[in-house]
Amino acid sequence: MVLAPYFIIASATVVGLLGCAHLVFTFYGNKFDPRDAMVTEALRVVSPVISRQTTMARAAKGFHASHSLGAMLFALVWGYLALVHWTVLAQSPFLLALGMGVLLAYLALAQRYWFSVPQRGIALASVLYAAGLGFAVVLP
Image (cartoon, rainbow, N blue to C red; front, top):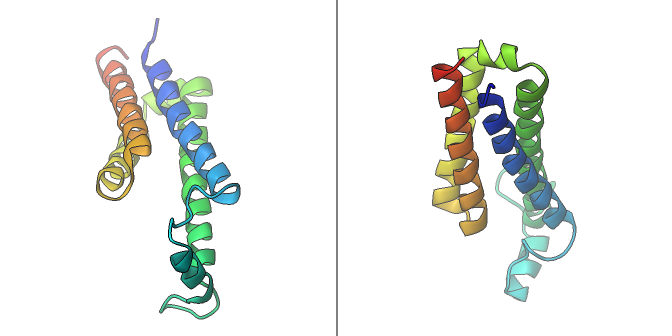
């Protein structure tokens, strides 16, 4: 029995769930709102230096949404490859390394800028992916 794809599917599932939750929290509720009402109001009226065509609040919403879509895309691509086209993924050192690299980049960002829930989720996804990578190399 080939174990590697199951670990990569599990990793992709964790990232996908984080991405979906992030997208829901971006558009529904107040999870990403500042606790200070004055800061919230300032973000609604102040533009970033790069452009007066948006506000910091609108830009933040867009950044959150695109961040969510990136995580969901990772989950869909690597989950699909592991589930449906395992031999393609297993025979591509580039794709295997890219997946690990993306997760390690997310982990570095999580440790520096995020809070504990996504940090633990990305750490789990990284460990699962690394296990899948290990099984793919040791037991092809």
